Picture 1 (spheres, helix red, strand yellow):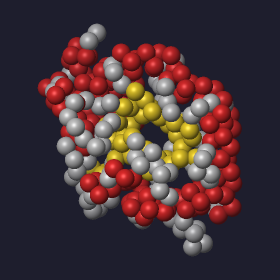
Picture 2 (cartoon, helix red, strand yellow):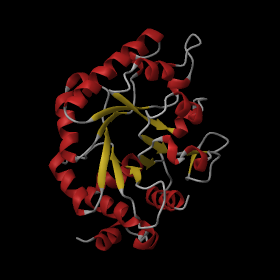
Picture 3 (spheres, rainbow, N blue to C red):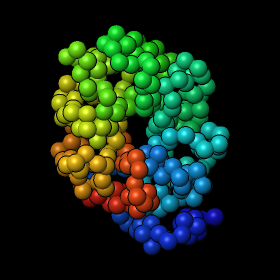
Picture 4 (cartoon, rainbow, N blue to C red):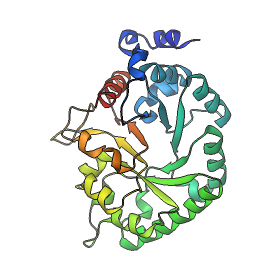
Length: 271
């Protein structure tokens, strides 16, 4: 099944998804452009092959996984190659650090990831300053294990990390207490702003620690919206000197995931 045939299976959005190859080759300092596949998780659940083909057809260069949908790492790697995609990172559960970190890293390496990202801290292991200090130690240990396999460990934030505890911002603890040689961060711009943080301040305080970001826009009322329809100044945030290597477009609950993905790619490619 070629990409055009895969697009037809999606039904109803073929014309919208048939993105011209010429735009894929357009120059932009933001390349490569990626997408967090959690955005299109329902399509991934229905067919990984069809979804990756559609994403590649839109022009995306990179994808970030949030689950492999019952496929082996080897199968995922082959599907990426057949669609001309690469996957710099995958999101994995926090519990894998203590339960099966070695096999998680092995799977990521087989897929071709350079980073394994934990995207969420369970409520039972956070909530106090000392808890976040222990988490920093845990992240350092996870980072060392990743380094030993030629990879990197990273943490992706939500909004709760920016709510002060006894006058201290938890996210600052994680950044200050983790070893920069072992731990990277994937800054989710929406959640940072939503939590009262300032992405520019974060970049300034810890330069070089954010090789990946989630490009997720926010309306004045706090809703997630299409990229470019919110109040976040992407041209300022995504400057080349930020040290960002991967830009993953994302929306947690888009009305039409594939249409959102297409519009997001077009906006970032023309920024």
